[in-house]
Length: 113
Length: 111
Image 1 (cartoon, rainbow over the protein chains, first blue to last red):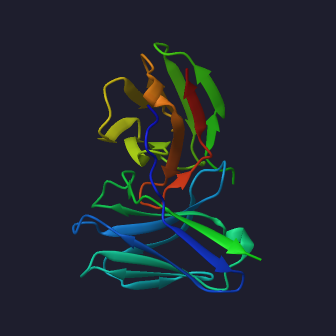
Image 2 (cartoon, each protein chain N blue to C red; image 1 turned 60 degrees about the horizontal axis):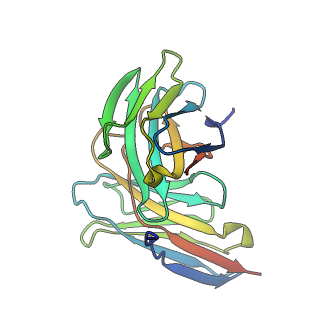
């Protein structure tokens, strides 16, 4: 029979709003975290990363917050634009296994003009 | 600077066949990783190569293998294809430390 796909969380916002995408990670030993954006037909695109010795990092229109106590990561996008519509993934990494990322299930962000 | 290039973009194979996918990393990047993306399992790590050596391997059967050449280009091979191997196969490269930079993938369909 047909396999059951992941049921991705969805977030729908209006253009110009701020968006917050949340992610719970699994391994308390993870020391590096990264956010990717994936548009249809393309591979994941790097957005921003953060190490476990930080709790906040800012980029252009994006901020990542890390709460190690509750193993929670969030991505804030300011002044969301239609071009931000995509699937967003968080991923975690441990130690020096840099190429081995463990990805979350993803969140579908839809921005309405 | 050119990004990660994966060839071919699309492949259709029959059960039982084998397939080879190719990846050219960003110039200067020595680490190449491979991932499988499916609707059911999401993005899953296959393996990582650095300076021609496999550094990490994910939880996939031995039918999945890879290698890296001295110019950092990498190939992955899947033998005895099964219907469940239908997926988007993604290659990513990095200097060594993160972040990983992904290509646009090879879409494999097994019939």
